[in-house]
Length: 364
Image (cartoon, rainbow, N blue to C red; front, top):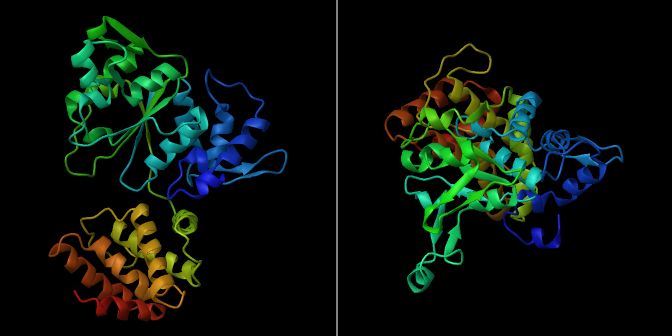
C-alpha cells in the first residue's frame, strides 16, 4: 500500500493491494485477453489468494467456492456481461471491485443504482452551459462511466442494477448487444474497444426492486454468490475485514476479539437459518438479512467502544447493542424474536451469561 493510499479512509482496491497486483503481473506469464492487466488465472489467484513462485503471498479477497470465481472471470473474458446475484452481504460489491481492479487496474468506473438513477448515468449527459453556448458538440458531452469504459476497453461496474428504473436498465441493451453507444445528437456513436465489459450486482431482498427485462437478462451470465457455507468461513471473513477496517480507522487491536466475533457470527447464522447450530431448537427468523456485512459493522463498532470507552478488551457489552440493532428492525415482531432467542438459547448457554446480562440490560 502506498503512502497516499495509507492516508485515505477507504482506498480503492487497486490502491490498497497495489503491491500484490504488481507482483502478480511480474510473475504472470499466461495469455492475457486484450487490455487485461493480468491473465484470467492471475485474476482468480488475486481474488482467492495463493503463493507466487517468488514466495510472495497473495491474500484471499473472497472466501468461498473457487469455481464460482473462475466462472465469473471466464464470463468477463467473453463478450457476455456478468451479473453477480445474491442476498445482501454476500460480497457482490467486493468481488466486483476486485475484478475491475485486477482486470483494468481501475475500479472507479462505477454507476450506483438507485430509484433516482437517470439514463444519463448509463449513457451520457451534457454540460448545459456549453450546450446552450455552442450547441451539441463533443466538448459539451459528459460521458458516463460506461461510455468511458467503452472508450478505454475497461470494466464498468453497475451496483444494485435492480434498484434502477426499468427504462434506465434497458439503456444497457444496445451497449451489451451491439457494443456501441449511439449519440444521435452528434450523429455518431462510441464503439467499445476490446476488453470492455460490464460487471453488475443485484439482489432481490430489498424493497423497491425492479426485475430485469428478459431482453436484458439474456445479455448477462449470472453467478449467484451464496452466504458463507460454514461458521468457520464466516468467522474468517469477519475477522479479516474487521482487521482491515481497524487499521484504516486506527483502532487498536482489542483483546478477546476472536471470541466475540465467533459469538456474533453464531447469533447471526442461527437467526438467519431459523435453527440453532446443534439443530435441536427451531427459531423464529427476524425481518432483517443479518448479513456478513452487518456482522462486520457490529464488531467494528464494538472495537471502537472498547478502544475509546473501555479498557481495550472487546466484551459482550460492546457488541450487544449492535446485534440488537441489526436484529430488531420491526419494533413489534423482531423484538419478540429477539426476546425469545435470548430466553430459549442464550440464557441456556453457560459461557454466554455475560452476553445475556448485557443484552437484557438494553431492555426489550
